[in-house]
Length: 269
Image 1 (spheres, helix red, strand yellow):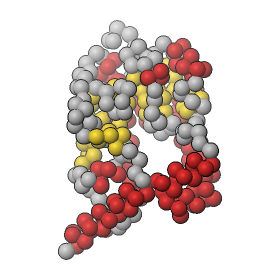
Image 2 (cartoon, one colour):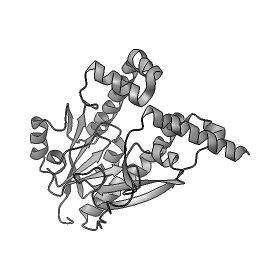
Image 3 (cartoon, rainbow, N blue to C red):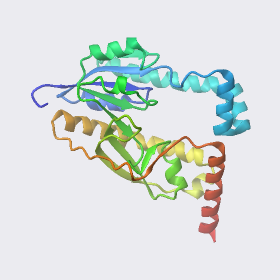
Image 4 (cartoon, one colour):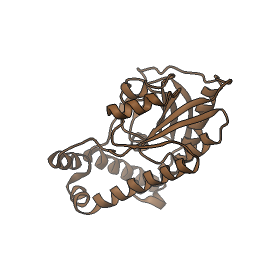
C-alpha cells in the first residue's frame, strides 16, 4: 500500500472528530467519506420502548426518560453529529448524513467510494452487507479486551467482575460480534474511587469513557497507518476464551450496587 494512498470510509453515530483529524494529517491515507447514521436506535413502537426501558432501567428512570430526557438526548446526538460534520468540512472530507447504514441507497454510496478499508467508530452492530464492501474489509474500535470481553457496554462488566484494568482493541470485523482478527490492543488501569464517586457508578462510567476517547482515536489511526504501510499483524481470536457480554438489565445494575457496597465496606473495615 506504500505506492498509493489507502482510501478509507468512516461509519459512525458521532464522536469521531479526533479520528478524522488524525487520519486527515496522514499523507498516505485518503478519507473518501464520513457516513453518519441518524437512526441511532432500532425502530420500536411506544409499547416496545417502554417495556425495554423498564427491563434495563426500571420504572422510575423510564418515567423520567419519557417525560424529561427524550428532548435532551436528541439534542446531544444532534450536537455530536454537527461537530463531526464541521470537522469533515474543515478537512474537505465528503460527508454523508444517512438514516440507516443498511439501506440500499447507502450501500450504493459506499460502493461508489471504492474504499480500500472501512472504519467503524461508535455504531450499532453492522451487518456483513456493509462491512464487507471495502476491498480489505472493515476495522472496529472495541473498548474491551477481546476475546475476554466482547460485546458491552464498556467498563460495567469489568467493574462488576473486579478487573483491575480495561482493554481497548482494534480488530477486523467478522460476522460474530467483536470476534475478528486483532490488530492492536492496550490496557488502562481501572480503579473505582469511592471517595469521589460513592455509589454513583454512572458518573464514574461517564468520566471514564471520556478518558478512553483519545487512546481509542490514537489506536484507530495507528492501525490504519499500519494497514496503509502493509505492516499490520493480525492475531486470530480464540472463541473459547472469555464471552460476549450484553447490556445490563435493571437487576444486574442493582447487583453491581451490592458488589460496590461490599467492596466499600471491606475497604473501610
